Image (cartoon, rainbow, N blue to C red):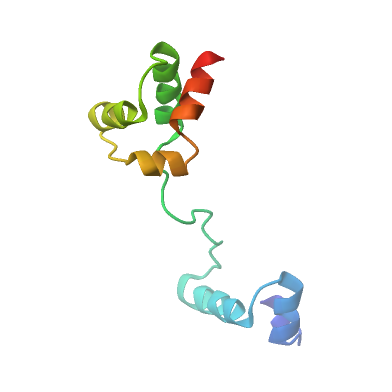
Amino acid sequence: MELLNDGWTEIKVAEVFGVLVRSLRRWEDNITVKGEVNPCSVLRGHPRILDAEVMEDFRVLIEESPTLYLDETVDYLAVVHEIHISTTALDNKGISWSTISTSAKS
């Protein structure tokens, strides 16, 4: 905001910071209302369904029971972790029967 006070145009300041003029105006509003410019949240999109703890547990399950089918792993996630996810969703996350059987062999 000091650059604007020093006579820079909104367009030039926005160009320097690589943001839209609309963002500069939002920053000005935040300074007026909150007394500071809050940084953008790093949280984007949907929260992860399978966090690191669940994935580690999942990895151990596959090592201990390499013959499990994908639908059985979905049942396991529902019962043990209370995570309701379809086999299609697991497959979209890169977890399929072939990846399970491959990881279990190694």
